[in-house]
Each structure stands twice: as structure tokens, then as C-alpha cells.
Length: 236
Image 1 (spheres, rainbow, N blue to C red):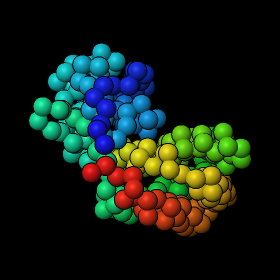
Image 2: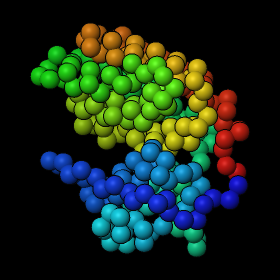
Image 3: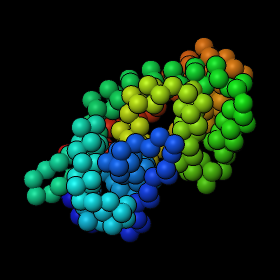
Image 4: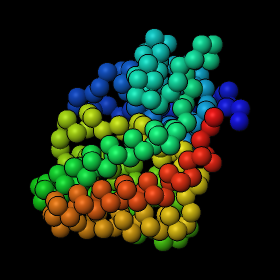
């Protein structure tokens, strides 16, 4: 399969500034990760340095440093004469990633449940979960693959643990989700909705143990749904 050699028509969106913004290369790496999640960039695609400098308003050296960050986390591969190419995860890659995601997502759910009664946390989490847990129609089910990014973002925010946020492989998780976006069946999506509904109920009930158990089970079930399909959807 020949990877596409041109950047997608939609520009990469810049990161929203925060009170404690990461470095510029980190923000560029994060923007590329979000573009992978939303499938503006696809597995096997070469990232065009000039397009990124234009879209993000940064220097070439900043983009190159972002490429190095992404390469170190296994999201892109740097090759002579081609630059940065978005990697395809192997089955071994996916198994290792899911093992880490199970533990960290479970911890995030546990902490979110413990903190759900603070301030407006419950209201915020309910809002983030609504479209995910109420999805029923084919169009709604299709959108849950994108809605869950916001769901996890709010969950991690409510968990309120800076170290957890630092070690979570967000961009690599985006790559995994994007790689399997087109192969999820309606039955898969309905099962995911049921799992997210269970996680959401446990967090809103303020039950840390139940929230962690359900979140970890969801990641294990994700592996059961996707790993058997790895050979058919991994680029050589």
C-alpha cells in the first residue's frame, strides 16, 4: 500500500492556550496528534513540514523538534529523504499500549469518581458523557469515536493528577483509535456505548472502585474487539 504524499486539505488547528502552556514543540506535537485522531492525517502519510509551519505559525525547527517528540513516542517514523511518516501500530505495539491504557485509564476513572462531588465536576462530566452514552442511531454511533476524546479529556481533568496526565500516552492512543476507526462494526459501537454508560454511572455515583473496574474492563474489551483484526489492517 503506497502512503499518500500530500498533506490533507484541512489545516491543522492550533492548540488552545492554557494557564501553564507546554513548550511550542509539545503543542505542535499535540496538534498533530489531534489531527491524527480526527483523521486529517492517516496511517502511512508523510507529514509536510512546510504545510505545518504555515498552518501552525511556527518555525521549521519547531516542527522538526515536534517530529522528534512524536518519533520518540512511537507515533511517527523518521526516514531519510521522506521526513516524518505516521506509523502503523503492529499487534505487539497495540498489546503493549492497551496494557498501559488499562492501568492509567482505570486510575483516571478512580480519581474522577473520588473528585466528582467537588465544585461543578459532576455537571461537567455529565455534559461530556451525554452524547456518548445516549448514542443510538447509526449517525450518533459513528460520532462516538470522536466524542470519546472529549469524554476522556474531562475525565482526566476531573481526576486532577498532573503526573497521570504527563505519563498518559495520549497521542499514541489517538493513533490506535484512528487506525481502527473504519473497522468498528455497529455491534462494536453499541458495546462501547454500554461500557461508557457503566463507567459514567460509577463515576457519577462517586464509587472509585467500581469506576476503575469498569474502565479497565472497557480497555480489555477494546483489545478483544481490535487485536484479532490487526493482521488485516496493519501496513507492512
